[in-house]
Amino acid sequence: MHASVSYNKVLFDASKEQSLTEVDKLLLQDGSIYGAGVSMNRLVTKVDSIGVSLNYGGNLTSSGDRASTYTLHGTWSRPLGPKLSVTGAAGVDGYQTPQTTSIVLVPTGSVTLTRSTRRGAFYAQVDKGVEVQGTGTHISTSFNPGWAMAIGRHLSVSLNGRVVHNTFPIDTRFNYSGLLAGGSLAYALPANLFAVVTHTYWQRQTGDAPAVKTNNTTITLSYGKTWR
Image (cartoon, rainbow, N blue to C red; front, side, top):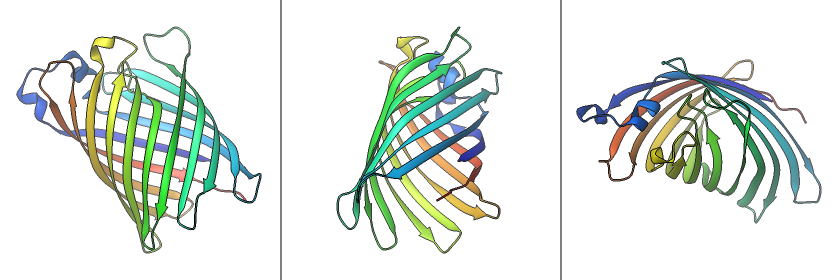
């Protein structure tokens, strides 16, 4: 079981030196993100684990737009060797925005390969999911490589990249491809709480418009609890 609340702040936006496109006006907003979920897993063979996860996510932008998504996935994981493992998830996302009169269902899922090292882990993931951002809620298909390392008992650091294509149900003219790179610091607090600071550099291009570059910083407080 987990829950999280975060606040997103656009610290610097190079696109403000040029005219903002309509998609920029949707995406470049401050706002809050909140969510909760539960997952269950069971070892069904000596190496295979299957499970189910149910998650809820919501977003409130600075302009007052609200959106929400509900994710139901079946999950599977298996070690491929002493230091290599694979995990998969497949199911549906149901999202609702100010423009929809009911929940819209979208097939979603992911596959992740993880290589453990003595100090951390490298991973590569292919993912399709729904990202809520008020009226700018979109369906995201991406390739995500990354690295994570624990420093002591409480602190961890991670670096990640992302190659993404986003599709906007509100208007396909907003569809764009983007490149992201960033890092985060996470600190384990008492009572199963975690504080995370994430910074992301984001470059995207819509059609023939000039590329837009943005720096975002997000502060997240999350709760996680595991039962065995």
